[in-house]
Length: 338
Image 1 (cartoon, helix red, strand yellow):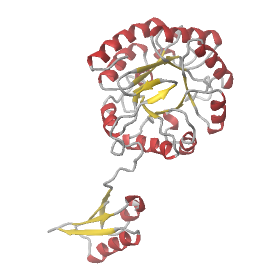
Image 2 (cartoon, helix red, strand yellow; image 1 turned 90 degrees about the vertical axis):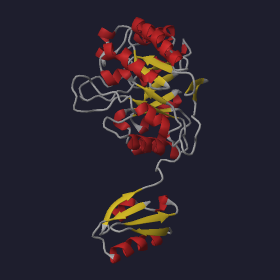
Image 3 (cartoon, helix red, strand yellow; image 1 turned 180 degrees about the vertical axis):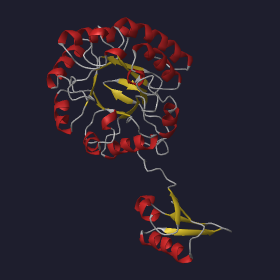
């Protein structure tokens, strides 16, 4: 940790910083320039609380040298990790597309969705049994009944299922219904109690980026899961909130190479929630694959016009099939496969 003192800092203020460093079990290195005094704290940074130094008189700023996220960092795991979902690799050379409806509605709808997802060439299926909605009067999902419908439809095509967990009290139910991949939604990215609990289970976790979360906050949220013992984490960029109103969210394509540099874990993209319109999804999906994403989370509905949730952003079965062909060509162009 580096502590930069103010130009006006006195010798007594410098001494107070040094005393705190020593009191924390670390050693100090004081560098006195013509104007500035810079103090380095040498030892285990985890023993230091930066906020304790920031409030000291005479301190200008405090900078950590080591990253706070250690388990998910590529520094501690230089090779990229591959997460196995029932034998299907997520990460590595092969790009996976997870398709399916925003919400589970009826058994017929799920049966048709599963057939369409499988026919398009997707190897995993998504669907929401529990839905976080902005309005308390909007459809909130079918709950446990929806999980039953989902498993029934997906098993016919041997598709692992991906669904969102909102409440820690439902985790045992998710385990009982053998959900293959648990999704933590954008609104729960910093629900730390929920992150701790999914850190204790042996299931892959898709961690979506919060609506206005920084990359560091996102990585630290993943560290909560990893610190509990579950290292099967998949980052999902789903667009961030900005001042722009022409589309639902801004897909931060830049986040893909940044995350691939910072973490060894797979990174996927949800182009459906980013654009919010079905006509935007192909372009955003193609950009994500070109930028290095390990997978995509795409909404598909057998009849988008009749979808109970997010109808505007759902692709039809045929549109998903056509998109998969284009994505395959882009994947090949960047030296990967779909």
